[in-house]
Length: 113
Image 1 (cartoon, rainbow, N blue to C red):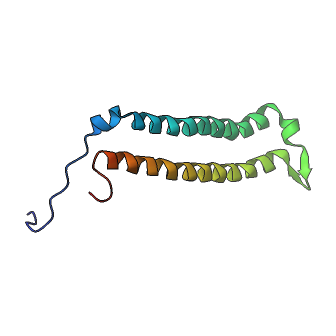
Image 2 (cartoon, helix red, strand yellow):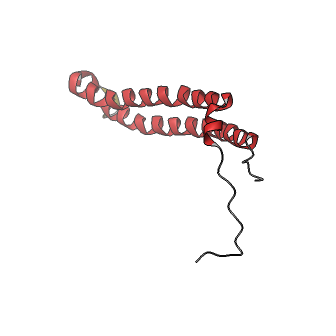
Image 3 (cartoon, rainbow, N blue to C red):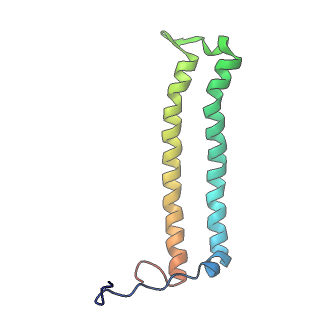
């Protein structure tokens, strides 16, 4: 059963009109300029460890700090790299969120609607 006292839902935005808006294209390009290079960097950095251990075992077995070898320290560095990429993404996404809200406001579907 529906609740007759419930407020009616607002109409859905015209997604086709939004997709045609130049501001939407700019937003998509801004996202791609970070997401694609960050993904490529992450994959290269992630697979550098198994490639290094497999093809360059002498280099990766070199002691760097006490008994810790290069492979061990590189593996630990991947945690820092992942956190750093996450931080960069979160900071960039806050800007994307502002641009998205402005775009929705332009089409009459912002926070006040």
